[in-house]
Structures are given as C-alpha cells and as structure tokens.
Length: 293
Image (cartoon, rainbow, N blue to C red; front, side, top):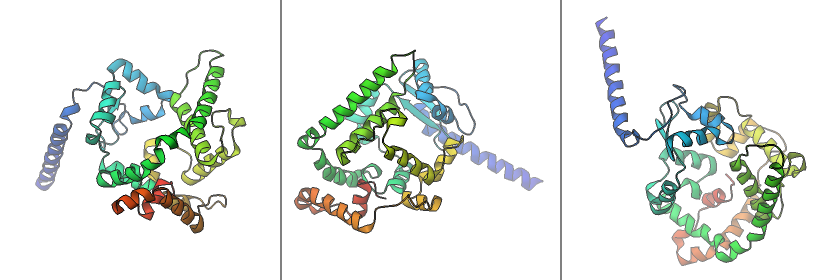
C-alpha cells in the first residue's frame, strides 16, 4: 500500500512540475483573450474546422478582437493564436518575418508530405532555394501571367455577381480564392482552364478526376477531422497513395518524363548555378519544387 501511495505521489509531483513549466512557457499569451475550451481533447480546433465559411473565426473576432487565443488538441498545441489584425499580420509577414519560423514539428510534416522544397526548409537552405526559384518570378515573367490572372478574376467577378442576384447568401471567399487560383495556375502552367469557378456541372472533367484521385488516395474525411488528418500528414505522398489505392488510373510520372522536367528546370536556373555552385539544387529538391514527391 505504501508503494502505491509513493508512486501516486511521484506521478502527481511530476504532473505538477510539467504543468507549472508549461504555464511559464505560455505566460506570454496568457493575457490574450479567447473562448473557453469546447472539448478536453480537441480544445477549440473541432469547432474551428467544422464551421462553414469561417463563421466561428469571424464570431470570435467580433467578441475578442484581431488576436484570439484558442485551445489546441490534446495539449500538443496548448495555445493557438488566430490573428486577423492587419498591423499584426504586417509585422509577422513583413518587418519581423525572420522571427516567425515554422516549428520543427510542422517542418517535419511538410517535408514528409511535399519533400525538401522551399516550403519545408528554413535558414540557408530556404534562402538558396528562394534565390533559384525567384528567377521564374521576374517582372518580365510576371507580365506574361497577367492575362490569365485577369481572365480568372473576371470569371470570379461574374460568378459572384450572379450569386448575389438572389436572396442574401453567405459566401466562403477562401473557397472562391482557391478556385480562382487553381484556374489561374493551370492556365499559366498548362494553357488549360479547369473552369473551377463555374458551376460543378460546367467545370472541366479533369477537375472531377483530381477529386476522385484524392479521395481514393486518402479516403473521405470523417467526423473526427483532427484525428483522421494525422494519418496523412507525416507520410510520403506517393507511398501513402500506393498503400491506400491500387486503382489503375492513379499513376505517377515515369522516370523519363521526370528526367525531362528536371533537365528543363536545371536549364531555367542555370544562371544562379553558374554564379555560385552553392545555389545548385539537388534532384530531390527539384522534385519537391515541381510537386513530384
């Protein structure tokens, strides 16, 4: 009996020490206002993910202001800051960008999912890749993209005007932004419009094919969105797709096509490589830039 009591006392002492240490770490956000936790396990994350058109985030912003403190999942992220204040965003992404690096956990997830591309590395590797990739975003290159972006923007404007002709409706602008970005990118890269902005029955058949491929690869999203997402966040994309589906229409670029793409990429970035060999990208980094992982 004495041994049980001593064990319980030791466990209680360790938990108390961890709790106090955790509180000291998060003292800097303790005074930030925010809602109470909705769930012991999921915090506020399930409410945030389940709300349509970011309704929960907008409601919290009206009550608590431009910086809101949320409770994370299972204590892994004890506090999550939801930032919408323009001045704060300007400081985070602008003047003090170097002080807001991704956490090692997020970097590991991005690297496993997308490869060692520009979004999954920090420091010297990020600067080196950005130096090479920036050659594709010169003023001359950007001017060549304007027509495609403007065409997609006009299509979105017309679609929004049509949607506003009827009774009042709440529109998810994040979803619309994704659709116009998809149309713009496919037009710029491949000269093909997926018509993602149009009604579902009018959109390009490839758009539905991509949806079907993604669903077959990772399965339908369950009600436990947060827990199910973990199944695909930290695994190599191509291996995961191969494990979950053997459908004949899910395939990957073969070696010859990949080698052609790598050659084209190397030619387009050879100037930076000639100026300094340290800016030359390895093949796995090139594969990550083009989304072949």
